[in-house]
Image 1 (cartoon, one colour):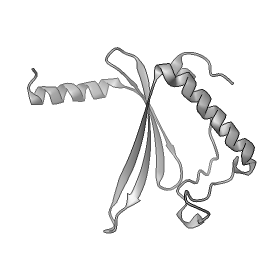
Image 2 (cartoon, rainbow, N blue to C red; image 1 turned 120 degrees about the vertical axis):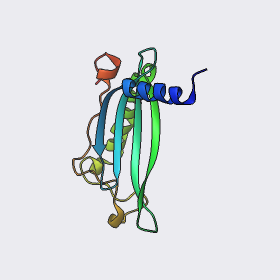
Image 3 (cartoon, rainbow, N blue to C red; image 1 turned 45 degrees about the vertical axis):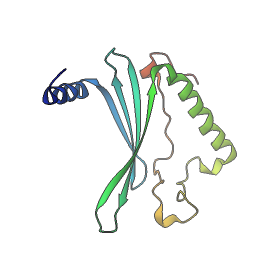
Image 4 (cartoon, rainbow, N blue to C red; image 1 turned 45 degrees about the horizontal axis):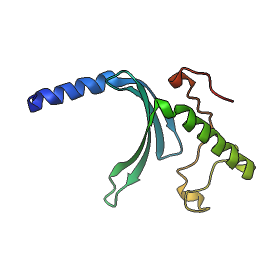
Length: 136
């Protein structure tokens, strides 16, 4: 069994090795999405999607609330298809949302609007991860 310090060093070395690609997307004033491609010990790819949301504490300090989704290569196509279909459905039922900034998460109060995206929507494509062209 490795010593505690040796194990920590091995874990740190593995963390440094397994990150292949990273992309961040700013979405409003307080929200950022991170798309991190990583590899397993068997050199298989997986994607970690992280939503990071800045929160302000009563004392004036700030912290980040994070939510993660781990997406494995066998699910890339199903996930991309489901995401594409869902966004298309939203655009069908609410066409005015296509390029307008969204109102706040919990109503129409535009003063706390951290879901705004000044650049509109962007298309996510996973073909680089799966090695196959994206289905259109």
